[in-house]
Amino acid sequence: MEEISKDLEEYIKQNVLPQYDTNHVGGHGKEHIETVIDRSFEIINEFHLEVNKDMVYTIAAFHDIGYRENPDQHEEVSSEKFRQDKEMEKFFNEEQRNTIAEAIVDHRASLEYEPRSIYGKIVSSADRETSVENMLTRSILYQADKHKAENPTIEQVIEYSYKKLSSKYGKGGYAKMYYPDAKYKNYLDKMQELLENEEKFIEIEMGLVKKLGKVS
Image (cartoon, rainbow, N blue to C red; front, top):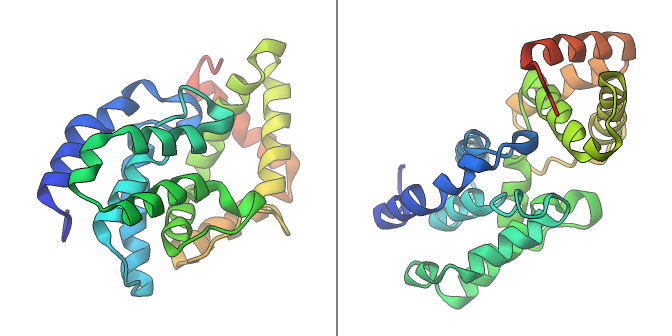
C-alpha cells in the first residue's frame, strides 16, 4: 500500500488480518476490514488530511478484531488487543500507540461521544457502509445472531433490522459521518429513501434472506 511501512504492512497482513477469518458475524470479517482500510485512504485523499498513514492503516486493521470475543464491547476489546501486541512498539512511540488505541475505541463514537482525535473520526467515517445491499445483509446477520436466544422468526429479525437501521440511517438518525464524500452521500440518500418505505424494505430483506439461506 502506498506510503505505508512495508514491514508494518507485512506484519499486519501475516498476523492481524488472518484473525478475522473466524470473525464473520454481522459482516465483521476480513473483507469488511479490507474495505475499511481502503475507505480510510479514500477519505484521506479526498479531504487532503495530513495524518500518519501507518497509524491510519493500523487503526483500520485492528478496529473490529475483538468482535468475536465480545460483540457488545468489541471496541474496547479490540483496543486492548492492540495494546497487548508488543510488535507495535517497533513501529510507534507511546504517544502514537495511545492515539491508535483511543481511535479504535472511538470508531463507534458518534453514538455516545465525539472521537478524541482526527484518527477516530477517520476510522468512524471509513466504517460507514456505502453499499445498501451490504448493509442490509450485515444487518440481517447481526440481528439474527444478537437475538438467537429468542429463536426469532425471519419476520422478527427483519423487524429488528428495520428499527435499528431506521434509528441509525433514517432522517435524523445517529450515524455521524465526519467526511461525507460522494460515495457515502449516494448511499445515505438510497438508504433513507428505502427506510421511508417499510414494505419495500421488508421485500428486499426477504430476498436477501433467500439468497443467504440459513441466517442464524
